[in-house]
Amino acid sequence: MSAHCQVTGRSPGFGNTVSHSHKRSRRRWNPNIQTKTYYLAGEGRRVRLRVSAKGIKVIDRDGIEAVVARLRSAGEKI
Figure 1 (cartoon, rainbow, N blue to C red):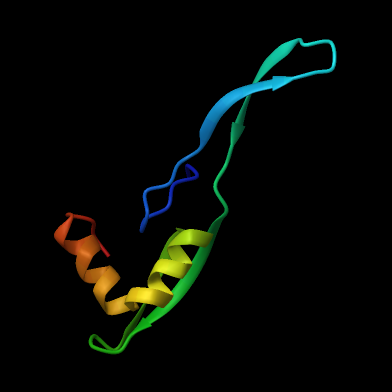
Figure 2: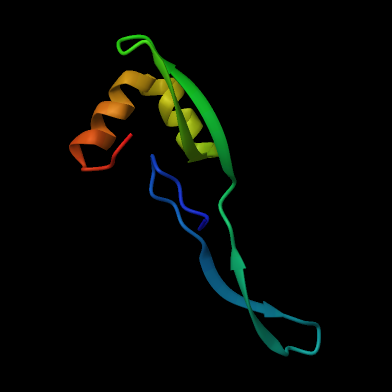
């Protein structure tokens, strides 16, 4: 699976590694993706999400019910 956050949409950034001799080679910066399980009290079940560290903070701030409602309105199946 790709390094992509379901909540914030963060994906890898791309660029160059520059050595001391100034040779350049391609690299990528992956976001800090975690697989987290949250309990939806309204539905009485658990959902598993692939979220970044920033996505975890968004869920803590807004609540899992609001975030899942936002994902469903965007057309993502949860």
